[in-house]
Structure formats: C-alpha cells, structure tokens
Image (cartoon, rainbow, N blue to C red):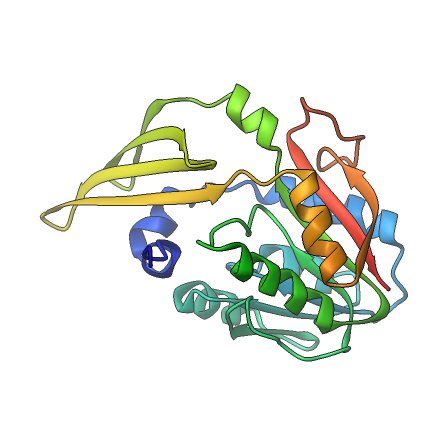
Length: 242
C-alpha cells in the first residue's frame, strides 16, 4: 500500500512555514458569500471537515453559529484550539471515519481538503462520513480544485524563500494526480516531501455523492459563487442530504 504522504507532511513545522501566507481575506470573502447564499438559521450547527488551523471555522462562528472543526493534523488542531471559545471547538479526527451522526445542519470540506487518498473506497468513506454527520435535509459543501484549470495553468518549477528556508517546488501530473515535489535544506538536512492530489472531476463527485445519499443542487466555479466552467478556478458543490 502506498504511503499516505499527508500524515507526516502536515504535522511538520516546514509545512506551516511554506504555507504561512495563505490568504485569510480570500477565506473571509468566500465564507461571507457562502453564508449569504445558504442563509442558515441563527445558531445553526456547522462541521468544518479537515479544518486546518480553523480559519474558516472562526469566520463562521463570528456569524453566531455553532461550529466544530476537525483535522488529522495534531499540529494544526493545536493551533486551532488556541482560538476555541463558546460555540467553537476543534478535534483531531480522520475524515474517513464517522464523526457524530445526524447532528449538524451543514458540513463543509473546503480549500481542496480532499483527493489525498490512495483508493476510491477511502474517498467514498470520506463523503459518506460527511453525509452521515448532517441531518436529513442538511447541506454538504465541497470546495475542490478545477481539474481542467490545474492542468492548463500548471507551473512546472518555482522557488520560494520563507523564514530563511529556500523551497524548490516542482509540479507535474502523473497517474491522474497533480504532484507537488518540495525540496529544501533545513535543520542540517536535505528534505523532500511530495503532495499528491487526485484530479477528480464533477462526474466522480456525482457518483460519490449519490452513493452517500447526497443530491447536488448547485455547482459554482469560484469563491464569488460564479457559474462553473472549464476555465473556472474552483469546483464548488452544494448538495442536500436526501
């Protein structure tokens, strides 16, 4: 069985160094647009799946909703827990396993926090777990990369220097996955990590969602909730639990 690359990489300090400049303003705009579209009742229950350090969860809680976030990375959850407060809590959990049943009004999987697994069975289990977490009639939102746009705009090589570490990054497509090979020297050692995200299309998600009892109601192409096309930056799915 192929090693699951994310289990080690996400818990390193180097991962957090490389991605320290993620756009919080973009996340805030997306959540504002999403909540305006969903129009949830006050104090609705939200589950943020693969929440990272909790930037989306924090934005949602500020709109007076109850939010739970979970992530497989202990390091990310340790950071997220620093922001815990009333109606906002975080846990270490694997999205392939069920986390509460028929409990939440909304479950969210945002910012390409999917497509990491080696098997279709694991992908299906993750969608099934998300579906089981929400009540009947509840809503599941998945925000994923747009396969066509990724392939068309792939930058083969780039380098970044952050906190004194020079990261050399190579990207390529192999076995229907976009590979991101990251090389750098840190703490007196040459290091290499490779991220791999499966290039899933709308048709793939339609199968997974259908099996999990989810009906796709809307398909958007970016964080402004514009229509989806092959040229869109994102693939954002909004589904209802039957």
